[in-house]
Amino acid sequence: MSFVQTHGLWSAEQQDAAARLKRIAEDNQLDTIRLSFPDQHGILRGKTLIASEALRSLESGCSITTTMLAKDTSHRTVFPVFTAGGGFGMSEMQGGGDVLMVPDPTTFKILPWAPKTGWLLCDLYFANGRPVPFATRGIYKAALKTLAARGYDFVAGLEVEFHLFKLADPKMQPHHAGQPGEPPEVTLLSHGYQYLTEQRYDQMEPVLELIRRDVMALDLPLRSMEVEYGPSQAEFTFQPTTGLVPADTMVLFRAAVKQIAQRHGYHATFMCRPKIPNVISSGWHLHQSLVERDSGVNAFMATVEGAVLSPFGMHYLAGLLQHARAATVFTTPTINGYKRYRSYSLAPDRAIWGRDNRGVMLRVLGAPNDKASRIENRVGEPAANPYLYMTSQILAGLDGVDRALDPGPSADTPYETQADFLPKSLREAVYALKDDPFFRGAIGAEFVDYYVHIKNAEIERFQAEVTDWEHREYFEMF
Image 1: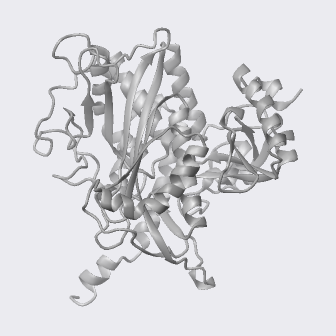
Image 2: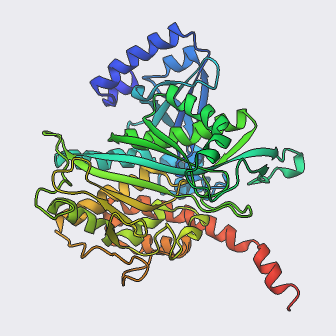
Image 3: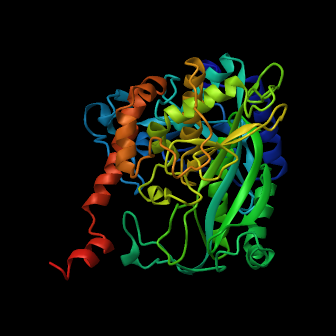
């Protein structure tokens, strides 16, 4: 029996999808298939196999080193992998041992920008069939399973802002290499502040069309392309989808945009606030609701005149507020992302909700019998790992339901309302998560300690650097 059969890893749907993809790969005479998994940062890692080898690996899996799970955002290994337990307290993780990437056949795509290349998203398992506890897609699947057991499915729509630049100098001389290397030099594709003007869209249309064409060819649920407020800034929105699909969509979309742009002489970045004059912050707004599995009815939909959400939806909303500070490290996992939280902007700075108000953290859109009733969380940055972002929402929301929490009144003056402020830095957000008993219980102390360790490694590297601000502030004065 194969690894998949031995451990019962595939559903009937996945088995059918595996048979289909074999036919598609042969009909399209694919040369290679990329096997990828989303790492702790939501970045795709994996191996490219000759198509015939990849097809043979569908049910047996493909090995990959556990050190992939030990890296921070500079790709430095920040756990002592050659000590007992590898720094994880697990014999399976010691010495950079292997785990298996097992493809999910339902995710199969043919990449339109890479000739004769297929792509599969994978889950990680130890040799004994146990899911790797640090694999974030697996963590999200567990949250969805918890939700399904209660009779609900998670529905999410995506609004993703990012920047597109013309590549001026890729910085590929040997002395530019490092860990990380020198970032490229870029020029703008448009001036900013002409939000949603057709002139600016037409100016950026050539590169936006390259992305639109290939994103549609991937069968991602694209809804719109827009020019955002800042210079060279764009926003793509995606229709609501259910379960794993919105998170899988996000990781593939980010990878696709960067790869397509690079192949055509552009640079795309999902960094929140690049250090480029006049460029402004990008966010990732997550629209979410729950639907009843049996009836398909939106569980957030109000039925009482004057209500914005159902009682269930209001309790879920209160759970998001209750755990907002501890969840911020999942919604905003970079040092840079906290430079977006500014008062009197279109970004939140405190844990509040409001009816159709873009200054709050949680913008509520709903009315009696409105099937599109939902909560828009405006706190996230586009670099967030979607599996952790969405997991944090489901778990926090369900806690609000279980405890029948009250979110309080709508905040009509969001930057004057008395409420808990969001963390001002990644360090503060890490402390909030580390000290929070709820997420330690809901996700597991093992993962929380692991994630906190990685984030602290990034923070310590940042604090060891002498910044431009410090040099300007102190070098002459003292």
